[in-house]
Image 1 (cartoon, one colour):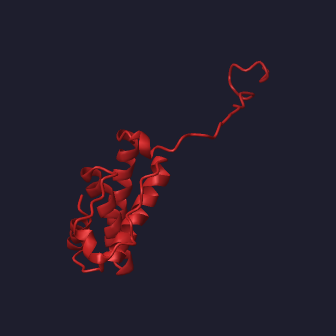
Image 2 (tube, rainbow, N blue to C red; image 1 turned 135 degrees about the vertical axis):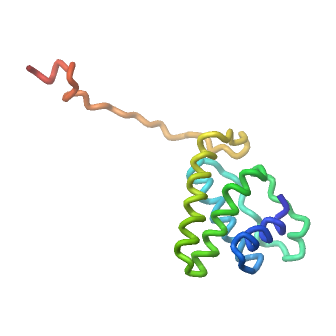
Image 3 (cartoon, rainbow, N blue to C red; image 1 turned 90 degrees about the horizontal axis):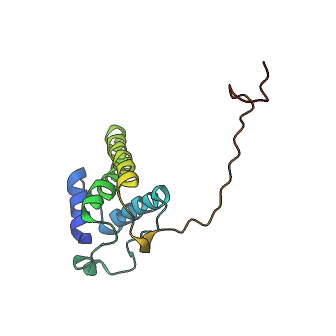
Length: 138
């Protein structure tokens, strides 16, 4: 999705006119949250470009459908939070959280953005109180 049209869409959805770089920082906040929750490493939007270059720059790491379902509501929530519109930002964040749950359940993260699971986890269950445990007694 073209980055400039993404920012325009977010400003339109919130009925605001935030600056390009501010909205892009909010978009990067959304990507960070997606990365944490989905255990992924989607790249952030490059903030080092000159503003006029964003007209041709695209963000392609996440499909456009999911950009609209995740990044738009999160950035809109940030804008409304900045504007102190509590009920509006709560609605935007609730929409983001619901969509993020769908994303983590349904979307297969491309291999290039997956974080290898290097942690080995061992769990030991405590079955001493289980109904059929020989340690429970009669």
